Image (cartoon, rainbow, N blue to C red; front, side, top):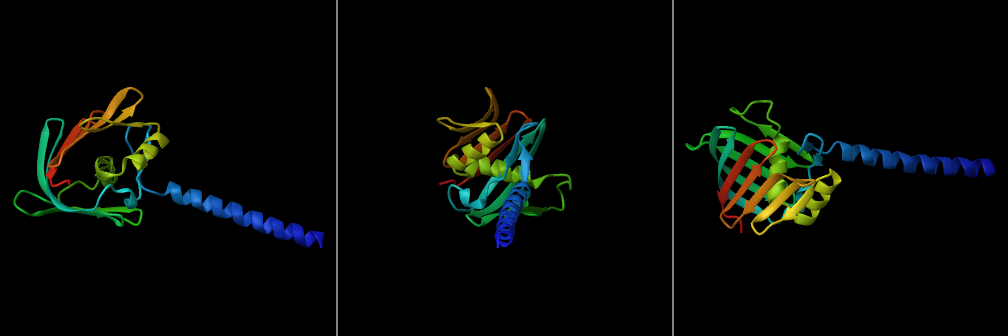
Length: 188
């Protein structure tokens, strides 16, 4: 009888340990980016968005001394995000989706090496709830600071990313990677 009880306990403990291990494995497979060379930011789930979006945006971006201009239609809510990118003449430049914990991107013009997870991460830094962002950033050794104009992501005392928000525009400057976006649209 004691042998039977020990066997039952062993099976139950094994199942518990197996279920914990599989949960950890699922967490590790969530998409992530490196906001600094060592800060691994795991993308937040879509339900952490501040507010639902279904809007057109004009995007101007710069990287080094190159400038880019495009338009986007963004639909984002608690279920996920879809972004359609167009050039100034309305031609399709790409489709990005973040749903079900996966990021997908297709584009006839952007290089295959472009990691769409970075676009999703920048979107989250601009438009996701502060408490969820703060926790995710703390988990990777970074800090979220609120300013009068918006938010800043800090690594110790150094500003890594700066975000300025108003009702008609959002400006993200990544000081570490040397790029910036200005999004113009209705952000209310």
